[in-house]
Length: 386
Image 1 (tube, rainbow, N blue to C red):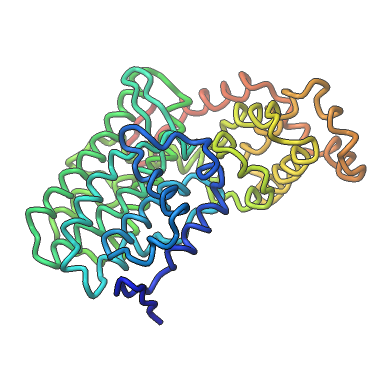
Image 2 (cartoon, rainbow, N blue to C red):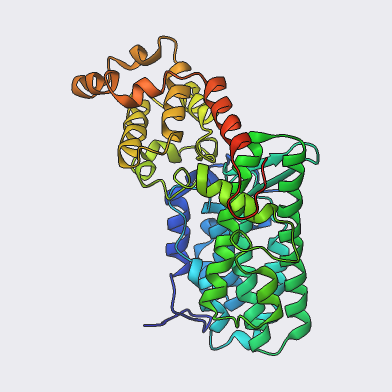
């Protein structure tokens, strides 16, 4: 049943004040001054802070502002342990709203603008191309999923020029990811390349899902240009995209999922520095957690228990082991530093476990193993090697 705000806006989705509560639940640090909200491309963060201090102003928002609020909330939380559940609203629902005709142009321009939003502080799921100072994350997938929804809505509502503007930026994003992968391979940057394959697979997977959601025609020229880029060879792009998709499938697919075990320990939500990175390369993340004065000994034990549970749920996911090693090695006396607060049974189980044994592998040795596997891998579709 639709809710009606005093402004007259009819909502089928989440109420704005509840949306803000959800952001605060998973990213409380935004409202505690830990994140910098001023400066270029950070206005979306400032918007959430403003509304949190001025809740009554939410009663007067229109469709465009509600769309903007949903975008801001999702950008802020997409890298957290519990992202806001507005995906379908920003991908499709709001683009089909009964009053969208009066708002669609502003919503589309907001979508284009959001491609440049600064997400550096709100996610740790990133890879880098140091040569160019480039960064890529799962936020590009979030953006692609919104952008293709905007494109379809604009076509449906007969705004071909604006639809082409959206299409041009989608193609620019695909081109950016393609070039990043090519350059990382040329530079022999194995670890950032591996991270990037996981991110690319996520991003193009998001794009594909919304293409299907909008039931785009397979005969459409734009569909042919951008669909299943991580799966099927496409004459418009380098085979590096399909190769990368196969690398992700072979090495990282089990590592980068919803991290359900990490939702339980709420201390992980204390700081944006605690956001989870791309697995399995999580040693630095564990070190940050272990060294942090924001976390008590008891809270570090709670996080270790979540690592152990995550591994037992899916024992091919090695990232939790690496995070555990990073955390424990950062403590003055290793795991014994926490013995006083570790439940005895869990302490004994942990010390004798496969999990702890595998955590003994040094970081250099672990990463060398992945580098060697990548060197040996032959893509079954393209026959490419690293």
